[in-house]
Length: 145
Image (cartoon, rainbow, N blue to C red; front, side):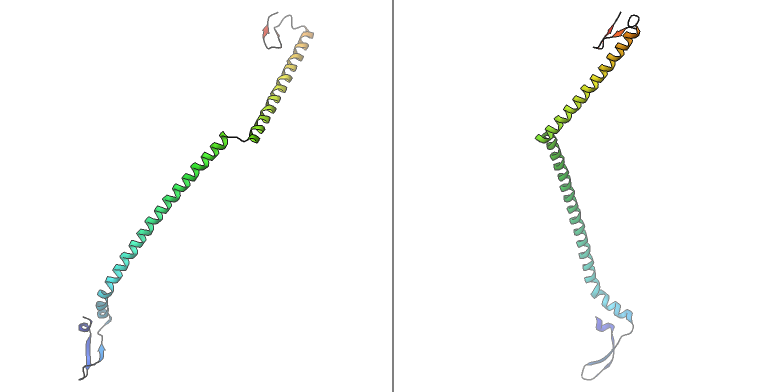
C-alpha cells in the first residue's frame, strides 16, 4: 500500500531501488494515518476506561471514609454519654461539695433576709406602726391587729 503511493524514479537492472521520491507530505500522512489511528484510538479508550475506573475507586474510597467518620462520631457520642452516666468518684465528690456550698450560700442568704425582716419589725414596733398596720410574723404570714 505504501509502495503504491510512493513513486520510484531510478531502478537499476539488478532490481534494487536506488531512490524513492515522495510527492508531498500529505501522501505520507495519508499512508501513515490508518497505521496510527487504530493504536491511538485503542489507547484513548484504554485511558478513558482507566480514568473512569479511578473516578469510581475514588468515589468508593470517599464513601468509605465518610462512613468511617460517621462511625467515629457516633462512637465519640456514645463515649460522652457513658461518661455522663457513669461519673467517677472524684467527679461525684466534687459535685457534692459544690452542691453543699450552694446550699450553704442559700442558707446564709435566707438567714440574712430573716435578720433584715426582724430589724424592720423591731423598728416599726418602736415607731408605733404595729397598732394601725398589719405586722409580719417571722414565718412570713400576715396577722391582723
